[in-house]
Length: 204
Image (tube, rainbow, N blue to C red):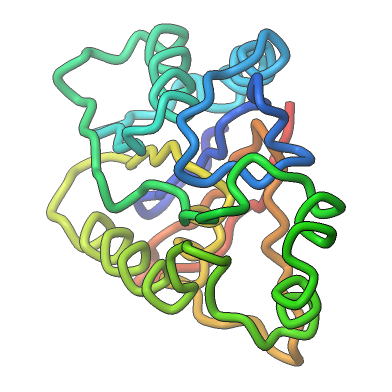
């Protein structure tokens, strides 16, 4: 994708995992990409072809690191441009790591009722949503403000992409969140005086 004017930040969510990220709460669980997930990221690469990426910043978790490596190989990016940022880890779901919503509803029924009603700030034994949001938004704002020349590629997780978009674009109004983030997708923001959304959740 090539559009004139302003530098851009590309936010990629990793592909599907062996632990089924599409249906399971994998946060700090360090699950690997599945064959389907690798195929999703390989298919995404043509959308990024021809972009001048100054840096590639990614989560240390395997599903994100491998996604970044696949994109780097496909795009011919030198290893020297890659950077791991510990702050881009997904939120910890604590005692609910690896479980489906149905399993959590049975094992932690009181918590799940509070969670569905918007009253819970953290999963049992997990990281608070407020703390997670603060660390991710600080990291994204720091990277976005750095004096780099060219575009920036961030490869991480659903929560990181969503909070990254919130950090640069502000909160959506009317209680709605337009930042749906599919596995193996890329969302793009551009800086033209201020940050604006150029494309959200692009899929191959």
